[in-house]
Image 1 (spheres, one colour):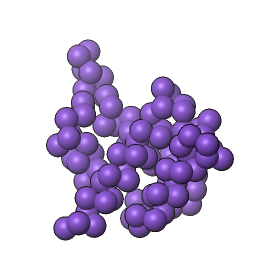
Image 2: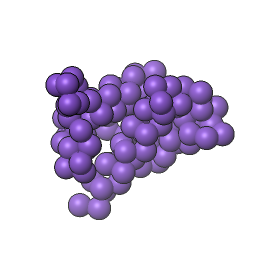
Image 3: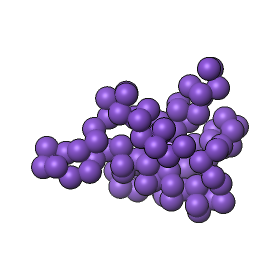
Image 4: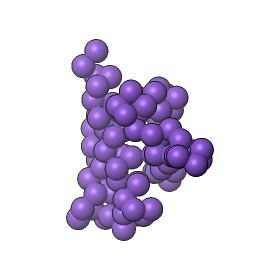
Length: 92
């Protein structure tokens, strides 16, 4: 599922590598989601309700908002993109 998420991000125009050749946004987002999932005891196979709860928890006003803002808000942005990814899979 992690690789499918990375492909989803790439298809939506997020950068795989920086101009200097270092891994960029898609890998940062995948790593952030992986850390949150591990921390919260989830696997990559979340329901829309579960990812929604995580977005609320790590978003503005949530109990883990400070963690969501880490690394220039990478954590919450990654979770929001993952929520979009999960929802897109439900439509199919």
